[in-house]
Length: 415
View 1 (tube, helix red, strand yellow):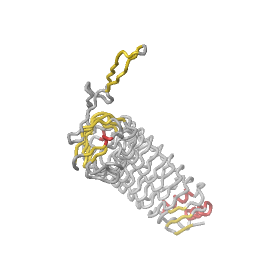
View 2: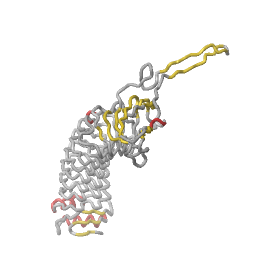
View 3: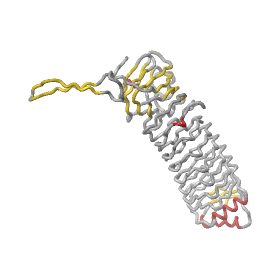
View 4: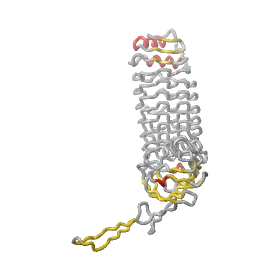
């Protein structure tokens, strides 16, 4: 059914001394722009849908349902690609779902005001197969915008309008079909207002340049590149000084190995799982200011190429180091000057790792001079210390004084 939006007309009855004397007509321009006859103009948001790609929570196999938000703002014309047009002004009106005469692939054009768009791993996420033009689409702030769009390719070359968007959380999570030539010109996106980029490219093959992004307001980068099977772009000049959470940031990012040693990470409190299974990563990050970090658990777990000098790190506020280097089979550095006095969990810390005798000796001698947490289980992997000698005595001092249980290449040492 074709629908057109005409100008709104307000009719007011004018009453003088109790007698109706006339009518006052007030003509109002509809929201979202338009010309004198009520038409909606602008650059269209152009997308392609395959109605047959149904899944849990989707509409029927001959339908498309737009993922509008209850908090969004809408006044747009939608051309469904079969000669039918509708006007949409509310997120929940019936016209946000369209039924085609037959199943198939259709190009949908949306023109006008559309602020708020989120699949969030639900609805017709599998049916959206292509974005040809961003047009006037504005995402809103709810996150999860294209989360779960497993069949989506984005060949649009215009710039997505991120005005007023503070969150890109889960923006493209699980967009498995994104190709190497997708998301062209993403480096030109203005992300300067964004505060949350968590999970943004998680479980994708994204690998476009984003080195020009202004991320100075971002606070959360957790899971941002988690399980990105291709990402290895230069982001060394990013200003990450506002970020507090980098947990899982490059977790299982197999190919990432860029120089991020000059990053200002002084605000970060959580680095847990940050480089878990980042198999290629082996960059110099020895100058990082990690003095605010409290959680380093699993940080280099299975990062089997990492072997950089991080002996000068200030870890005095870290409380959890469990599995920190477990499986990082190449790691062999001197951590004897680390202040681990606040760490209460070192379980499986160096499992599968063999520190040189010199480095393990230095660790035991340095740590034994500290006032440590009680009853910590410390796994030093396959490392051996000089025994008999001062390092072995230092190990025994830690066991006797602080009731630690230490597992290393020499056996189990317990109170």
